[in-house]
Amino acid sequence: MVSKIDEIIENFELLDEWDDRYRYLIELGRELEPLDEAAHSEANKVRGCASQVWLETHVGSGPGGEPVLSFKGDSDAHIVRGLVYLILTLYSDRSAPEIVSTDAQDLFQRLGLDAHLTPQRSNGVRSMVERIKSDARHAMATA
Image (cartoon, rainbow, N blue to C red; front, side, top):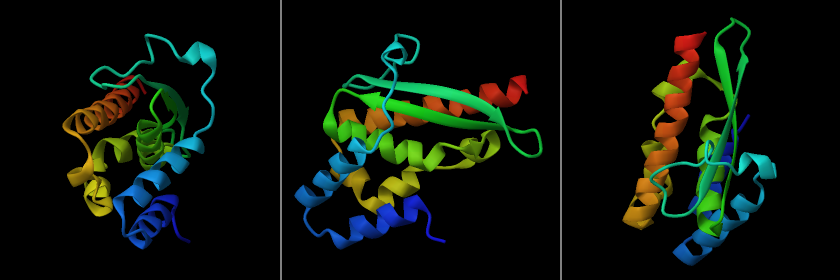
């Protein structure tokens, strides 16, 4: 079975032009599950992003009792919404230890995004990933 991330990588590889890749990223952002208005709060706001980004974290339990985290997110910028979609696809519905050990940089290198994002967007991506990993570490510590 092809994972959603593998499908995204394959689709990116089919697109030769960066304009097309950015359009695809924007399309992915449109697939984000809507975030409740109440979740657009200061508590859910990701610090370090030039655009407004909100992440809502839900912690459940896996079959072995380990914490499993799922996320919802949103942004006020179209390309950033696509980046949020990528990050949530990579990390959501995974166990806390998996989240902590998964490196998003590998995905961004494979997609070529590491070389095509502005420094501000790259910092925002790092901030989102660190927030997710921090939530995962907190879930492990309190499990």
